[in-house]
Structures are given as C-alpha cells and as structure tokens.
Image (cartoon, rainbow, N blue to C red):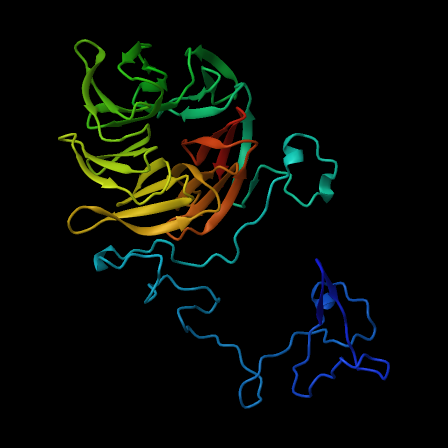
Length: 434
C-alpha cells in the first residue's frame, strides 16, 4: 500500500499480519483481488519470495471465467486497437451549427502517445556534463521521418525570414542583424551579404522577384535582370508580404495593408491601394480562394475580397495576437499567442466559422504547411517554448519535434522534401523528410 508521508511517498509491502502488527492493521479480505508487484512491473523486484504477483491479473467476467480478448471491430476500433477514421456521434471540439461543415479535423488514428522529450539546454550551450547519461535529448529533433542535414552559420541575430525562389540554387535569409544572406545550395556557403539598414521583418519570393520587408520600405530584387527597386509608402516595420491577383500586399506596423501593382512599361511597382480596418499592426497575410486574409495584433483575422479590396468578414475568435494564417485545402488555419490553432471552414452563406480548435501548452508564433516523404500533408507549428511541433493533417497526430536555442519565427519549404528553420539565435538549419 502507499503511505503519504509529508511530501514523500513510501511504498510499504505488507504481507500476512503478525501478532506484533499494529492494531490498526487489517488483514486483507478473501474477496480482495491479488495485487501485482509494483517493483516487478518496473523490473526492480529483489524479494525472494515476494508476497505480490509477478504477473498481470487476468480480467474476469461476471460468471467467474477469464475474459477473452475481442478481435472484432467494436466501438469504432479495429483489430489493432486503433480508432477508425469515422465520425463520432458527439464531439465537443467540433461545431455542429452547420451539418455540412462536418470534417475530419482532429480525428483519425489516435496517436499512441504524445512525444514528451525535451532537449538539454546545457547541451545546446555545449556545457552538459552528463553526456550519454543525461535524461534529456542531445539532438535537435525527435521523430523518425525527417532529419537535420546541416546548420548554416553567419547571422549574428535572430532570423525572421527565409526565401527559396523556385528553380533557384540560392537560399535567402533575413535577420534582425539588418542583413540578407545568400547561400549556395550546393556548397552550403554564404556567397553574398546585403546590408538593408534595418531589421528584416519578412521576405518572400514570387517568380524571379524577391521581396524584403524592412522599416518604412519594401525592397524588390529581380534575380534574372538584377533589377533593384525600393517601394516607399510603409510607415513603420513591414511584418508580412504576399502576392495575389497580380498585386503585392504588405502588412504594416501602422495597422494598414498596402498594395502595389507592377507596371511592365516602366519596370516599377506602383501604389494600388491601402486597406484600412485593423486597429493594430498587421503581422500575417495569406491569399486563397480569391480572398486576402490578414492576422493582426488586434486579435482578429480580416477577410478581404481581392476584386473589390473590401473587407467582407472579421474573425474574432482568437483572444490574443494572431501570429500566422495559412490556407490548406478548403480551410483557413490561424494560430495565436492564445495557445490555439483554429481551423475555419465556409458555411452555406460563404462566411467562415471555426470547425476545429487545436490547443497547445504555449503560445504559437508561426505556421507552415508541407508534405512528408510520402506526400502526406504536415502542419509545422512553432511555439514560444522554442519548439516546432509537426502534425499530420487533418488528424493533428504528432509526428515529431524540432528544438532550438531560441524561438523559431521563420519556416520555409524547399524542393525535394527540404525545409528550413531560422531561430532567434541566428541559427539557420536545413531539414529533409525521408
């Protein structure tokens, strides 16, 4: 039995009570089921003989016979014991306001156990004295479907943006050290450093163009023609960039979204519109289904029609800053510092409603969609505990974790199963799905 002794728990092994036993000791009833040895279960029992069983107690039916293990398909489980990919009758995590919105988010084969491994902070700093005996991980990731190929060193401060132009053999990374570094993908060497004169807030590539967001301007480079343009108009830091409907959109610190359109005749980007509505800085943008979605520090996601550039809906389900928005299949996915990932689906009216909410233990910083080595969809969720968690979609089963010295704010997908992460310490890592 267990005896609570202050803050310590003492495991006492009681056998047959003797005459010297305390008067409070009571002999076990003949109907009391036999107990299994706690230490035997942990492979540490050294009692010979031991008063407890060294085997598991078989389950009994009401008639006293041993219960037989079922091998049929019952209660939504298959022969292997995993839940089938069928809809449960009731699930509080799903909205039933619209029957047509029923989806498979958060369902599917139930994960046997969440990965609980933690990385040793002393090992990260090169100071762990325990070596192989350390109880924490001495590697940068946990998972059997991907691996780290290399680490690219050079930035002196946190990496906020990564871009990999399609068909290029160069990787671009932008940092708070006010530089954009260009990396040769064949050698892994830095082949160029561009000083931007301000913190890099974001960076994307579209066709031959590379766009970099910095305080009070957007820089545009053409990798084919070597054109170098500066787009004026932003007031404050440029936090997000996206291209849609032949326009470049920028999320600005002053709460506005600016748009430019490229003029081939003058080889320049001309101001096209300014979208107002958010009350605080716009920190994330994504385009999908002829809509522009913007997440902001005012805790909302706004939906804009790309033809009229008018706001058609405001999503107010998050309770903190909306850090990232992502389009996947027919769904919008958003994450926030409120520790949730929300999946939105369109109703018959065309408006978006939350169809599933995934909860984390820490605030979320960034989302990135990708495919594993078997082309299965994966969602990477970067949290402010310096860990990126990788989930299968739509089940949200955990596939692995990536650890870092500081927060990872930049995740970028490359060709051939490659993806890249950049953290607050300036470490740029290259990963690959197997």
